[in-house]
Image (cartoon, rainbow, N blue to C red; front, side, top):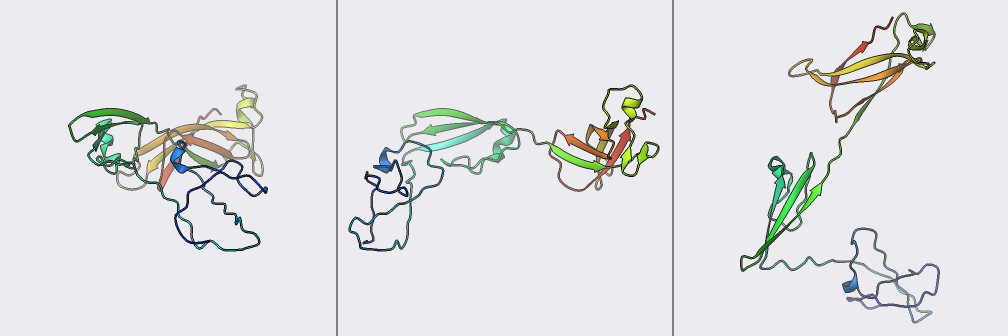
Length: 212
């Protein structure tokens, strides 16, 4: 095979390894370019054999000569989440849901605007605890189902409801960062979910309902 630039063409499928629906021309492609692209080569002059030295697939950027673009974020406090507010393909990294408006202007001063919204879903932080409350022991590594014994619900695995507070261990020491409640199980486990993203090192404070 001679080196050069080639365009894909239609051909019949002769083996299971060949693509079923090859593209005839890339210029007619209107789908999403993201994904895995594969190149299949067949030598029509059997039994000749050859090798592929390299393969490169390039997508040309749209012609933007004579046009300019400006991006604005709403809320305006998220403007810094744009990598470049005058680029045609900026990268955005918003910490909260943001609407981005793009205004394109041509060389004659005519402009048009459109917008898109990026929704940032809240991240939860989960904390797995293992603890045993003195006075609630049933035997080794087990506690009594205190809530059921006191007529609160009918779960044989719930001991008590606990409140867990996450507090700063530096700077404004012990400042409350987040708080949430969870059920403490008879095996000493509790899974506490905080409706926010928490990273770093903190103190935790555990409170029981004192139902006894």
